[in-house]
Length: 403
Image (cartoon, rainbow, N blue to C red; front, side, top):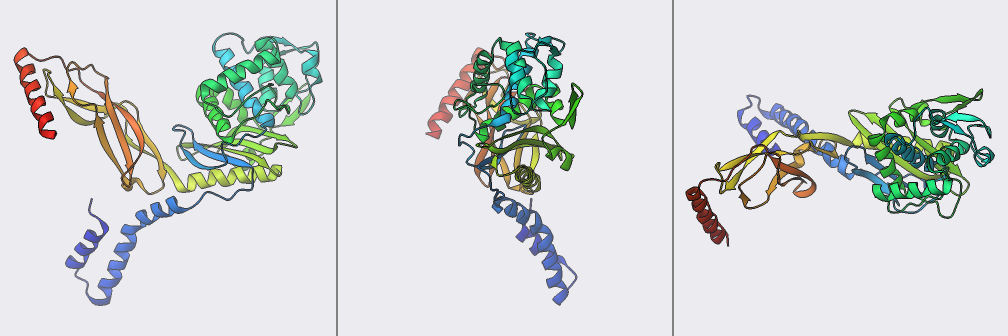
């Protein structure tokens, strides 16, 4: 692609307009051609919103790319955001067939006595897992969280062991859980980054459970309660996730929106009010969608290039990316992205179809920022004895020559 200077010089040389008109035309050309570059520069230079919360993070769902963060690894009290993990563990139990949505759960006295936000289940009565999930997700019921935890693991204490086990598997390095509801406890804490990791896993692994987070209200025992996530009513692209509040934790919100073919997850911890956590989350999401875009450079399995093969019945093999080559980049900066194929050398036969042989590096202004595995599109068998010896001789020559 020609650069801006070359295009401007071409216009000056061949334009039939002269004098002041030529200057005006050149200015117009510069403005048009420079607009994308300037847009990219602006997107890369604009800082994240200055939000008055204890910590926050903004990530893109499919890649996990972090678009903005503030004290994202600082340990904080999660309050009812804990219930995201409770619903994640429930999703795993449903997936493994340990429980079903139709299971009848007898409510324990412990669950019934739980304070704070409640679903209003009653001790000794039966309620289904399906109903408990709605009570946890929509009504933020502490009583429902304990009842479901006891049904899955026998006791809430054992359930907390499961929570911590899944936290470890997901890479939540700064979190610990001691209960299913988020009730204040010294052994229950999270980081904004870990909540984002958990939220991303819930959306990815259990979409049917995640759908419940968008419900505006739920009625149980003739008591109708609204979803505490008020961001749902302000922004139609938002479909989750969970609020939390205690005096120590402040007002917290994990939110997710899906716009322009891109899903973002924001987590704000320790806001001073419900209104502040809503506005902070809106600011983060709007920032992400305004200044970043999801760009596809190659599709999975799409032919990209060929690689030299040694000792085979073919001299080269077709190469493709094993996955979609997609990256989140500053809006308008796609032309600043280049790629390099970095193959395992030498490529020796035999090779199987789909064999990983290196990676594709994406670079922004010459700096690598993402890698994608490369695989073969063809099978390459070993060549004849003569061709194999010839290739080995050539390979040795090239190796010595490179040195």
